[in-house]
Length: 243
Image (cartoon, rainbow, N blue to C red; front, side, top):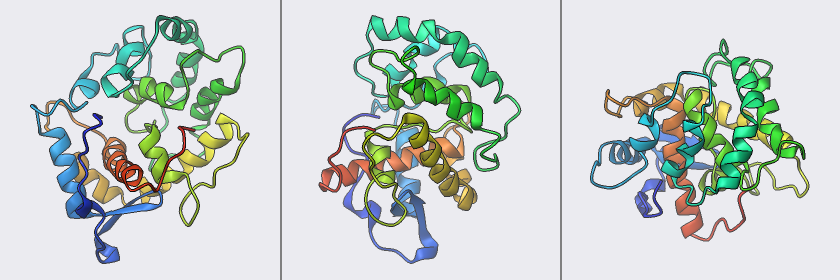
């Protein structure tokens, strides 16, 4: 998403609990979430990442091709070097083998942890010296992978971290030295909880996107979470680097 905020201070105004929707440790009134998603998906002159990222051509569900390695540029990854491209290219067989193991796995709100374990194994390549790629951490990797299974693989970046990582209830406590595998496991579990507990609301938000480029409830969660995280950063509630 662009750095220009979609957020306004009213997006997290106190509301009755039944009217709130939750992303990690932050909440937003449902009607404000509607505003966020509708603006992001229905503002062709605003140069948001939708629909460019979501409609970017791909070979098919579940397989990363060379074209897909460039997709993060359309979702606000400003620098993607040739070294990064070639490093990801060298890992395509490994990446696609794990993605094939997810072919029959349902959407994240319905999947059991044992079913999406191949996704954890895939993200754990960030810990493996033999597979680590220059310029690739969880942000870039999830932005390559999400479009393969937009219903199952969540997106991650600094603003999503601001929703999920921190001190207090419903946050993941920061931990120096934690492996990517360990972080991915607990983070995806938290995202799954937010998604499944309010899947009706997230589905309604996803339906706000034009039919020509549909989005998943999980993508709607990312759109709302990105905005809440951006506001957390603006308020000084988050100043850490990306996990």
